[in-house]
Image (cartoon, rainbow, N blue to C red; front, side):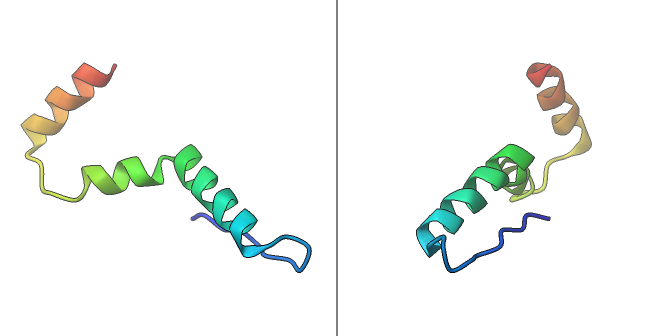
Length: 52
């Protein structure tokens, strides 16, 4: 779970940038895109083989 704390010193824009950076680092967006549509197990294995 991605969490960013906002303080009075840091503005909303800075917190939003930190949130986006953390999401990217954790691979959250990549996983979200992968899970958007159902993929058969055989398709997942093929994609996993290509990534490595």
